[in-house]
Amino acid sequence: MKRKPSSRDLTRQEYRAFITTGSLSGLIVFAALLINIRVSVFPPEVETRLSLLALGGTIYAALYGIFLAALRNHREPVMWANALINGAGLLFFALSLPAELFFYYRLIALFTIISTAILSERPPVLLTLALGMFTPSLIWLAHADTFQEVVERVGLPLAGLVISETMLRIQEAARRQIHRLETINAFSRQVASTLNREEILALLNTAIPKAVTADSYYIGIQEGDQVQIPLFYDDGEYFNGGRVKIEGTLTGWVVKNERELFLPDLRRPLDLPGVNIVVAGKNKESLSWVGVPMRAKQIRGLIALASYQPNAFNLGDMELLANLSQHAAFALDNALTHEEVEKRSRLDQMTGALNHGAFLEVLQKMADESLAQHSPMSLIMLDVDYFKRYNDTYGHLVGDTVLNLLCDTIRTHIKNTDALGRWGGEEFIVALPRAGGRQAFHIAERIRKTMNEVQVAGRVDDTIPTPTVSQGIAEFPGERAAIFDLIDLADQRLYTAKGRGRNQIEPGELFWETTR
Image (cartoon, rainbow, N blue to C red; front, side, top):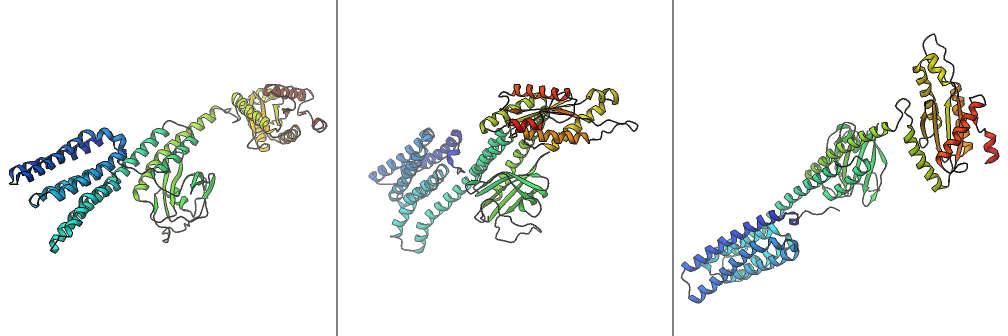
C-alpha cells in the first residue's frame, strides 16, 4: 500500500539543518529577552524569576539544537516529548511574563509553532498549540473587558493555527513531490537492470500503489485493434490477461491519440464523441479515471488509474504516472527487442524452425511435463526424399523453397503448443505433447498427403517434381523413457520408411491400433 510521505523522509543533514535554524532563532529571542530583563526595572525577586525563566528557555533551545538530531531514530517519542515541553513552556511563559514583555511571548510562540510544524506531524503540533496558545487565551478571555482585548487574546492562537497548518500543507506537498521523484528514480533504476517483461510488470505493480492511492490500476499494450491487459488490479483482486477494443473506450482513446486523459468526476458527461465507459474487473463503476500513454519504438499502450470516489486524483498523480509510463515503455521496448534477438538466436534462419539446440531444450521441458502429467508425447522425424536432386538439378534456391514449403505444411497441421525443429540438412523433427503414437500417425499422414499436392515454382521452362517426405514416429514414455533414445528410435523408423520405398510413415496405423 502507498506510504504517506512524512518528516521521516528527511535525511540526517536536512533534519539537522531545520533543527539548527529553529535553535538559533530561539537563542536569539531568549538572549534579547535576558538583555531586556536586565535593562528593565523590576523588583529583585521578579527579575530573578524572569531571568531564570529566560535562561531555562535558552538552555532548552541550545539542547534542542545539539541533541535532537541525534535522537532522530526515536522520532515518535521525541516528537511528542518536544511538543509537550514546547506547549508547557509556552503556557508557563504566557502566565509568567509581565505585560511589558509580552511581545517576547508572541515571538517565542510563533518560532515554537514554526519549528514544531517543521519537524512534527499534525497531532503533536496541535498539542503544542492547545497547551501553549489556546489554553492561555482561554484564561485571558475570562478577564477581557473590551472587544479589542478579545480579538488580541484570540488572534494569536488563531494566527499560530493558520501558520502551522499552512506550513504542514506546504511540507506535505513538498514531501509528496519528493516521494514521487524517489519512486520514479527507484523504478527507473530497477527496470534498467532487467530485460524480462514479467519482471518489469511486477516492478510496476509494486511502484504504482506505493506512489498513488487508487482502487484500480492497469497496464495495456496495443495488439492490432485491441489493447491487451497484462496487469489489471481492481479492489484487491487481479484480472490479468483481458482485452479491450481501441474504438469506443477510454483505454483506446489514450492509446490511439497518445495523449493523457484526466477525468476527475465520471458522473459528468464525457466530452469524447464515440467513447463510452466500459466496466471491467469487478462490476463496479469508477468515478475517477486517469490514463497516460506508453510510447516507444515497438510499444503502444497506457497506464491507467481508477477510483470509486470522485476527485480522487490530481494533476500531480497524472504527472507521476506519465513519468512511470515513460520509463516502463522504454524498458518494455528493450525487453521486446531482447526477446526478439533471443528468439532469432534459437531459430533456423531460413525456415524459422527451432535450431538443433533450442529444440532439445524444448523437448526436454515437454518430456518433463509429460511425466508430471502422466500423458504421452510423440515425435515425428521427417526427411525430404531425394532432396539432393533438387539442389543439384534445379539449384539451391529451389532446394530452399522445398524446405520452406515443408515447414509451412507442417505448421498447418500442428498446434501452437507443438514444436517444430530443423534437425539437420533436409531433416526435421516435430514434438507433439499430449499426443500418442496413433494421433501422431494421423498428423504425419496429413503432412504426407499435403506434400503430395505441393507445386514447387522454378524457372519458366523447369518442371519441378512434387517433393515427398518419409517419416518415423516414436512415443514417449511408452516406447522410450529418455529423449535421446526416443530421437534415435524415430530416426531409425525414418530410415525404415525410406528403405520401404520413401513417401512412407513408419510404423503404420495398424501398429498403433494393435499395440495401443
